[in-house]
Length: 80
Image 1 (cartoon, rainbow, N blue to C red):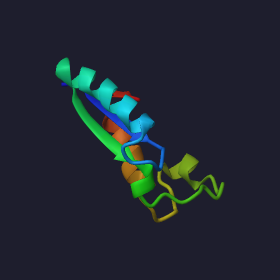
Image 2: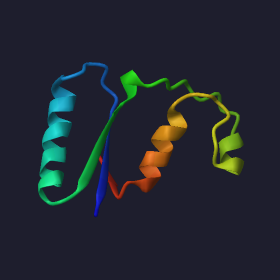
Image 3: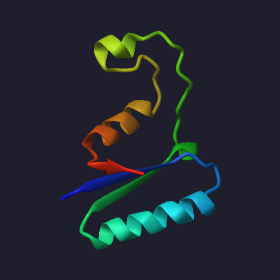
């Protein structure tokens, strides 16, 4: 099964961005894809401090929800 991950960066829940993303996901679901949506405004995502530790370890040193986003991105077959 194909997995599609949608990441919404708009802070407006139910706004135009989310409406368009949901339409795209509906089409993906109709073809049998498993879909998931993440709303960044509902997550604790802090800014990068540029330490570059992630380049060596593949893990961020900042304790927030970003690793969850990265893990889901890696598992997804497509993103929007």
